[in-house]
Structures are given as C-alpha cells and as structure tokens.
Image 1: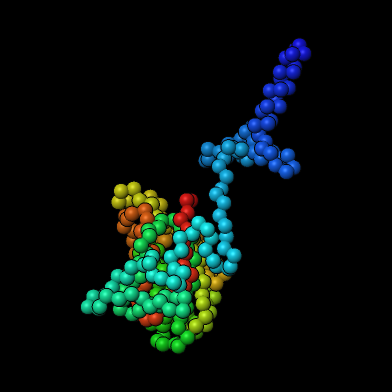
Image 2: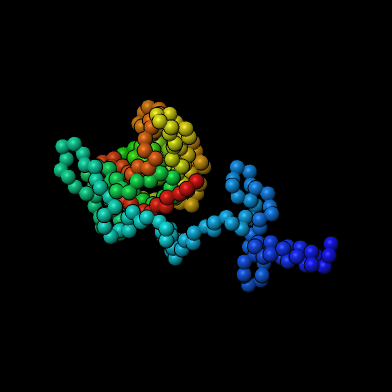
Length: 267
C-alpha cells in the first residue's frame, strides 16, 4: 500500500470515529454505530442515532406533578371533571373546599373530561376524621380506571371487610399485599401504573396490568386483570376504546381527594 493509500485509510477511520462522537466536556464518545442490534428492537447497543428521552422537570415538592403531567385536580377548580348524577337526584357537583374535593353523595361519579389509556396516575385521598359506618360503608369510593377497572378506596383502618375489597385492592380480584392505611383524617397516597388492555375487533389481544404503590408501599405488582371489576360476580372483558375517562366513584359516603395528576405512557 502506497503512502497516499495509507493516509486515505487513516483519514477514513478518523472520520468514522468522529461520527460516533459529539462534543462534550471530557471528549468522550456519546454513542456508537458498530455495535450489535438489541433483540426485538430496531436500535443497536448504545446507538448514537437513538432519540434521547424528552427532558421532564420534576416537581420541587414530594408528590407534585412533573412538567409533562396533566393536572386533573389542583384544589382550585373542577374544570377537568363532570359529574354523572344519579336517578331522581338534582344535578350537582362534588364539594370543593380547603384544596380538596369531596364526594357529594347523590352527585354521581366524577369523570375526567380527558381520556387515558396507558398512564401513570397520582392521587391523594382521605377518609373524613369522623368515623361513620363499617365494612364497605366506611369512606368507600374507588379509582375506576377507564371507568371500569377499580382500585378500591376504603377506610380500612381497624375496619374488617372482605380482603379483595380493602383499600388498595383490585376490586373483587386481588387483595393488597399489605394494608398500609393511615388513620381517618390523614391523607393516603396512590401511585398507579396502568397498562390498558388491547383488543383486535371484539377479541382480547392483551389483558390489562396494574401496579399500585400505596403510601410508598407496593401493594399490587403488575397484576394481570381478569376483566372488569363488578360487585359479587366475576368480571370479563368487553372490547372498548383504547382511551377512556378516569372515574372516581360516588358510593354515597364522603371521601376526599386532592392533588390528582396523570401522565400518558407509551409502553
């Protein structure tokens, strides 16, 4: 190989390496093009051409909404909600006071104007400090994901009831792994990761999965739902839209909610 050919080869190699680098403080490579393809993906290992994740600003307070969240309840207004009403009851909204909204028995379920499929959901709820009722009639509500898959809300503090109906249960299917409930009048926190079911026509292609973190404690770990979550019967799947509103249940007893936000996910 003559001198000109050697020089051309070196320059070509230098140019190829330069394609794998971008300027940074320590002049380190920020990706590669000569690595193998990751199985079941279109991208190579450490692929320089793979799009970087979007920058999201986290909240400066614990439990606060990040910058890409849809804030559904900030305690100031009910603009993200409509109320279903109940038969033979006058039309009314839930109560809004002191930074939270409270079930107004008879107002019907609270339904978001926005629809969601896969999502991260954060909400905080509290049983009123005055204990009233027992079992399923003590501060009973429910987070009805897509309007039909329920993560139970209930005052389960020293309140015996059926296991798959306690706070943090996937109603009628899975009890929570543990019961980390706080006393009535104190605020509980749910962080929920929801994977919506998929349908092809009327057929189920992929079931729903849900994870629930309750006051910082994992109580449901990617549980596969067997279908909808009705009362006293085994629920099944029926085909529906890929995104539907979130619903909070009016069970005819007071429950308080605050700081509700959601992030759409692409899984």
